[in-house]
Amino acid sequence: MARREPAAARAQAARRSSLPGLRVARDELKSDRVAAELERQIFSGELPTGTRLPTESELCDMLGVSRSVVRDAIRSLVARGLVTVKQGQGMTVAEPTDASFSQALITLLVRSELTMGDVVTARGMIETRLVPLAAVNGDERDWERLEDIYEQFAAAVEGADWDGARDHHVAFHVALLEAIHQPALELLLKPMTEIILISGAPPRRTAKVDWEVETHRPILDALKARDAEAAEAAMAAHFEATADPARYETFRARKFNAVFAEVPWARP
Image (tube, rainbow, N blue to C red; front, side, top):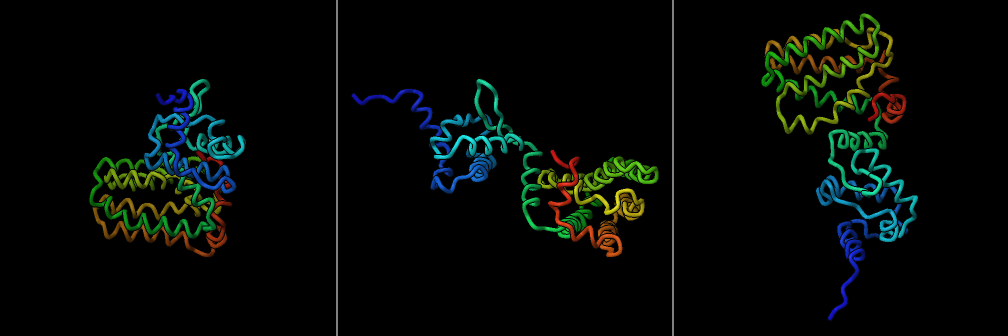
C-alpha cells in the first residue's frame, strides 16, 4: 500500500501549486517581483478572497529567497489592502477595495517619468470627452449637488480656506463624472479621484486666481441647460486655462512623482 504523505506536507504542496507564476529562477526573485506576482494573481482571481497564503517560512523555501524579501513583499501587499495578516491565522487574501485599485494606478504613475503636464493633459482629454454624457444623463439632483459644491468651492477660495478649496474642487470634478450615471464607467474611473487630488492642486495654493473658479461656472451652466456641446466646450476651456505658460509652465514641467511626494494628504 502506498505511503500517505503527512497532512502538513500535503497542505504545503497544495499551497505551492496555487502559486505557479512564482516558479522562476531563484536569483531573479526580489521582493517587488514576489509582490507583483501575488498582486496579479489576486486581481485576476487566481487567488480568491479569503485564500490562505503559505507561511513566511514556506514561501522562503518555495521561492528560495530570504525571509526579509518575503516580509518586504507581504508588507507592500498589506499596505495596499490586498493581504491581511492576523496573529494565529496567518496571511489571507483580502477583499480588494477601490483604494487597492486606485493605489495600483497611482503607483504606476509615480514610477513613471510623466510630468504634471502629461497627467493634466490626459485628465483634460478624459473629462472633456465625458462631460457631454453628464449633460444627457444627469438629473436635477446632480445639478443641485454640483451647484452646492461650486458655491462652497468659490466661498472657500474667497475666504482663503485652502484646504476647503482643495476638497470642494476635487468634489466638483468627481461629481461631474458621477453625473454620467454609467455604473461600469464610474467603477473604472474610481482612481480618477486621487489623480484629481494630486493634479488638481494649483501652482500657487494661496493665490485665488490660480484656482480658476470662474472657469467652473460655465461647465455647470451648460449641464443645467442640458447642452452637451456647450458643456464640452466649457470643459475644454477650463483645461486650456491650466496651460497658461505665465502661471503653469513650471508646474506642468515638474515630474508627477515629485509633486506626489510633496502631497501627503493624497496618500491612502
